[in-house]
Image (cartoon, rainbow, N blue to C red; front, side, top):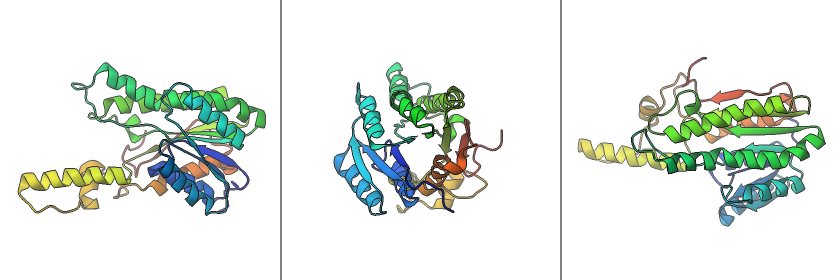
Length: 267
């Protein structure tokens, strides 16, 4: 299917690795120019090279979005790049429970996941409104609907992101700019798989069994039991983002699209 993204341009924050990199490459596959963002120059350049290999324009913008003024600078670079699609993907996660979390942990979760989304969006919005068409897509989490007891700060911050998306859609009514959220389930990225490997090795050690790589069926049963019977892939999230970014999604606005294999169930 032609998503009619050729000729459009996008900023994908946090796109130097993982889900963000796959989103950038998927948009490029659809003919969309992409501004790759990250903090590591080498990693961002490598993704931009992959994007450019699809025959589209690719540039890199660097910066830690939690630092004063950096989010605004990144957004202004996106404006000059001609981006009318914003994918707010950047956002750290950390494991904290109610007993161990400190005020600084809560502050870090919101400063990493909420404020960069606000700052980049606010700075780019005037350009989107003036253009009369645009997309703001945020990345949430399955933890929004089913808060994770060992990730309480992250779960709360992502819930705020979904709430902001609904508010932004209403704020932008009649402008031609839509705001939507994609909430991933358990997605197998290299960092996530390393975590699974470490936990699997620890479990094998406790049982006195030889170490072996984690089996996906076991991982699904333990961490993400869902009707689809598998873990998510970055491509699952990227496909959803590409659709919401496209002109085909003009009538989709203010939603949270859960791409989690059904792990959260129905409302």
